[in-house]
Image (tube, rainbow, N blue to C red; front, side):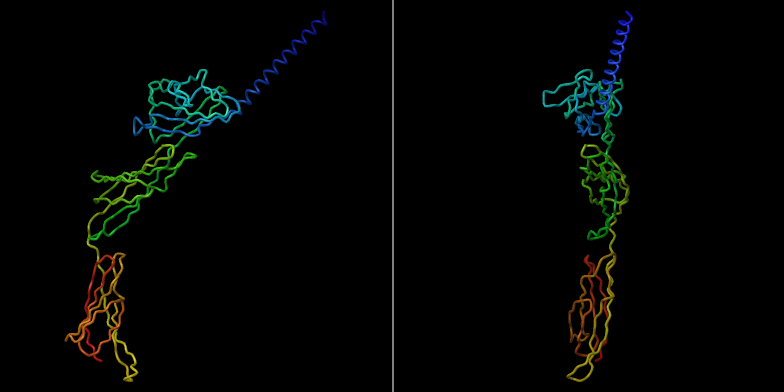
Length: 355
């Protein structure tokens, strides 16, 4: 009898140990499955069909890297639970909604697209009213599974940086200010995203001048003097946007520009004449001291040489020219310079030549 009791006790102990081992193995397998489970939100698609400011729908592209199926138990956006009735699974079959209770299954290596309606009256399961997500807000998505795993990804709006550089231009009658709007310093902040649009709104502080431009760089010419705002909105490949502003001051007064300065010199030089075997004089008309103003430059130097008795008249051109006069007498040398803007200046020298 004693032997039988001992055998029964030993058998019960073996079964108990075996059950513990099975439980431990099952727990170990569960922990292993939990560690191996991998789910990621690869990208999002945002829709603003209802409002230009708030997102009305978000499509999540979700991928499983697990070797086993996963059961999704909850999804949150910005830490608010999403009611399953507001989630649609787009898998190529007729559109259906899924419940988190038993059938929101993600198969191994499967990629799915989930459409989240942000306008549903029961959007949040935590009892809160619908929380609007603006285009400039971050979007944090968390996916919870039956293994008590939490897979999170945050999509950040891009970084908008606006720089305004002034450029003064001559418009034919005066100087006006134009401004180069530079948004090249802006950047996307979410992995795998990039800037796709740079939109500028330029408006005067009194609201009378408004201009809309687009592009990484844009040139704007204000229509009036005074303070201006340059508002830059950049949009990334996910549709997320960010805005920044820069202030600048414009001057649009049509002020007559300064013209060039004409300065003429007459220099007498001598040269040897082999025929007459003597030195003979000639004149150098020198305009090298003439100059243009405000960054312009001289393009034409025109000389008119007239003898007082009209016996010798010549027209010459050049910054520095030679005048071979034949007879003595009084001469008038008129210099006219023209700059690249078409502005002119003149000066006149009276010169007595005595050979």
